[in-house]
Length: 147
Image (cartoon, rainbow, N blue to C red; front, top):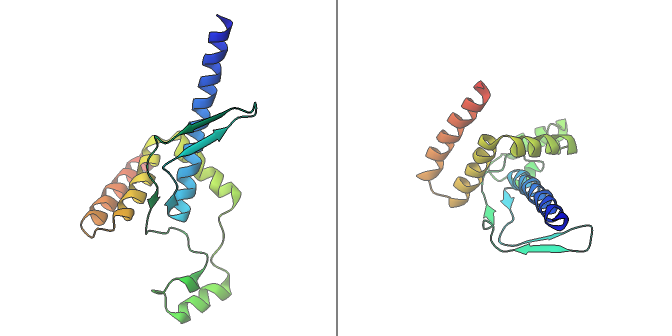
């Protein structure tokens, strides 16, 4: 009986770890507009590992929420780029900000869904789907904000 209890505790701990890893994956995917998927290898501290190919496919979005290199954006004119770059108004994402984003994704399912819809809608690159998806996201985020 102890082996079953320990096994269930271990499985529960692993499942919570997978949920947190998925939140980290989603947060980094949102920032980079590339959420890696397809396969997952997880190694534990006892030398064991877990493999699955039963996860969502890789999502490559086109909406980039954070720009740290304005020279890489062709749609921004050179004069504006020089102003932004020289004023140091473009900052990197701090570890604290990333942690807050991942925590919010992990603890608020509605926020997590909104982030996934942003990634998926912008990966489709359809002028019909993107505007309606973003309208749904804005409505969903405003509902979250009200509560």
